[in-house]
Length: 115
Length: 113
Image 1 (tube, rainbow over the protein chains, first blue to last red):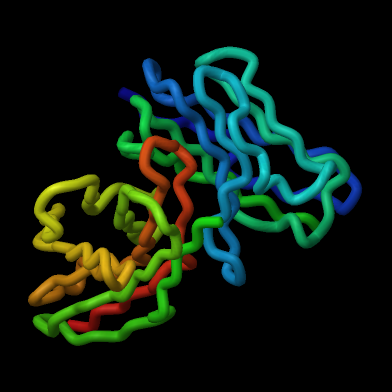
Image 2: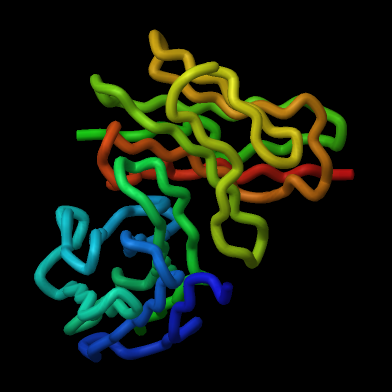
């Protein structure tokens, strides 16, 4: 299995630009998570989906952030417009099962730098 | 709301020293507990997990953790660390029967030969 695949691995952009991060979960997994990692705040859960439906987006910082999961094999996290404080590593993870007992499998992360 | 506290932000040890990393959570109900590890340049991976039963759980690479319900703690231990254990360690919790996994801020462990 290829694991969770994220793209791009690195993104450098200027303030005000739109950023789209992509994630392909492991085939057969039914939950998908987006996390943001920074030195100051550690790993923050932004949003998670179950069977392609957003379940909890309370961690999304503000309206500039949006996430979609149009099908079981693809999700996007979009930031528009981007700001320097959005600079972080964004991780996507997927899991199988319900009830919170499924192991999360993480992608390599997308390192975003907003100048 | 659930939260997870890892009080040790940076731990430095010599090889063969014993390790204990603290983890406390705040949630009044039944929880599932996890430790994840992130080796330098790699993605997070599961080290061990606790759902129910024996509160002392064993994971990969000689790690173990003990769930103490009365203290809301799930500390990670290893009797003798190796240089290859240098990594960042994250404690995580979710409320029973939900998928929302909350992570602590992580503990960076450096092991010197």
